Length: 151
Image (cartoon, rainbow, N blue to C red):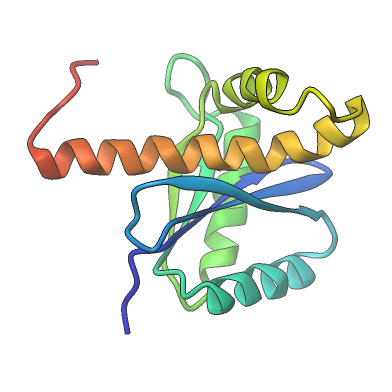
């Protein structure tokens, strides 16, 4: 059974932020933060999330340079996504994540004022994943509606 539910990952050095779409694939929400460990453990944890939430597509935030080129961090994330794709039942795609962390930090300042700085640092990864996912969902919605943004 295919699902429209999507999972997005914001892969950092210490943590992986995870976000999930609603069943209709319209709205993204932060789900959890995974601590980085071995690739096998990370793939197993992400695989469980895919199965538990009946995910049909996994998006991995792709950190391109401001000019759109792939830098060293982009190469690492692309290789990570390629490796992950071999471990999951759902397809894995890269999605441009430029500005997602800045957007997430802005959201966190407004919505999470009661958090300590340490709590905020951890949760910002999941919020960044939600920003990435919402960007994808919005682009897909515009495409389906025949509305295209001029870049």
